[in-house]
View 1 (cartoon, rainbow over the protein chains, first blue to last red):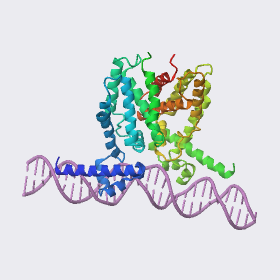
View 2: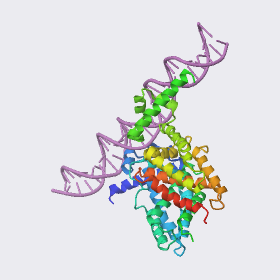
View 3: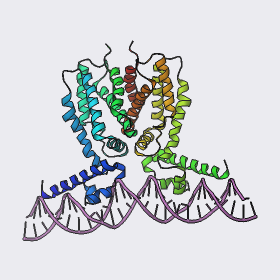
View 4: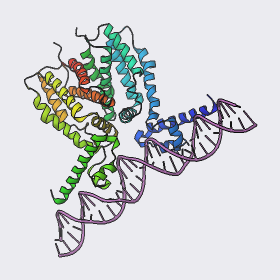
Amino acid sequence: MNVRQKQGQKTKQKIIEAAIALFHERGFNNVTVDEIVAVTNTSKGAFYNHFTSKHEVFAEQFKQIDQFYVEHLVPQLDADQPVMERLTLFLELQMTYLQNKIGWDVTRTIYEQELSTERSSYFLDPDRPLYDILFSLCQEGIEKSEFKEGYRAHNIVTVLIHGMRGVLYNWSLNRGRTSLVDEQRMVFRALLDGLKTGD
Amino acid sequence: MNVRQKQGQKTKQKIIEAAIALFHERGFNNVTVDEIVAVTNTSKGAFYNHFTSKHEVFAEQFKQIDQFYVEHLVPQLDADQPVMERLTLFLELQMTYLQNKIGWDVTRTIYEQELSTERSSYFLDPDRPLYDILFSLCQEGIEKSEFKEGYRAHNIVTVLIHGMRGVLYNWSLNRGRTSLVDEQRMVFRALLDGLKTGD
DNA sequence: ATAATGAAGAGACTACGGTCTGTATCTAAT
DNA sequence: ATTAGATACAGACCGTAGTCTCTTCATTAT
């Protein structure tokens, strides 16, 4: 990385940090791009050279979310446990993390952005790590006959993703006034009960 | 209603009809308020006198959705059938209606608006007819022991709403490329299976 | 009949996300 | 060493949602 690129990355990082701090402080919608470039002593030109939109600054911390799942949540899952137990634990840990570390405003902003923008969507990216995590768990679950007959791993993942979306959308809609962890528990208890083999 | 109010309502209606037509024609984001007031020979003043935002013009047709549920879907439910059957049918009819008559762009716009605006939210309005429909069905289901022990009607409604939100959000996100009806079937089969009494 | 009130509406104006053009400077090819 | 190209950045500019002020005129009170 040469001098020029290094300078660019420094500016980009400076903007990210200032923006995230401001968003956290006063909420995404109450922070303007003009303000971000003002406090960082940069310019619109610099900002839009590094990001395609104000929303995209979020993508930075968003990518860290899946990273966190892979690095800190998956290792907590005990491979000796049934897949169902592991799924339940994963969902519990995931939602706890989102509720306590990420917060509803960031979640809301991401959910809003994904709907509004024509640009590339992270939710629709099939290579998203979250999908791999769920897929391999579901695959294993099917092999061990923990799921009802007739389900393909892909279908179960779809169902689970729908559940997550519903729970997270609703939590965002309620501006964090509901308990994400409690609602998640209620929804996925029913969902997983409906998916598992009746014995 | 005096002359003045009558004139006001006439203007409002004119704006609604023109706006809905334009939205339907070219998509919500590609229609500007300036354009709407131009084709209706009105003004920004008139527009914002009747609506608090461009999004709100949608609310008009949105209210018709619940109206439709009450007037056309609920009557199709056979009270002799088990509640579970009726719920399944209701969801099927609901999603078919949304897919074929309302469309993903309108749905997407509503879902986006509900997240973005600080203003009054229709989704959060406890008096929304949809909630009554679901609540009374669930209440009856509990009385007839069709649901697992321990569930309150209120909880089941919450779970169902989460399911709907997830399915509809995802469908909007995919810009109608997935089959809402099929995905709904998959999700709610699992969900209702998990809620019903195991016998 | 006259005056006061206040809603419906017109349209200039503001705020802000995003674009466009221009400039300085680093890098790479000759 | 010189030159051509690329890129980080500055900041003027644009488009559009939403606001503010002002006018008009139906309605109501006196």
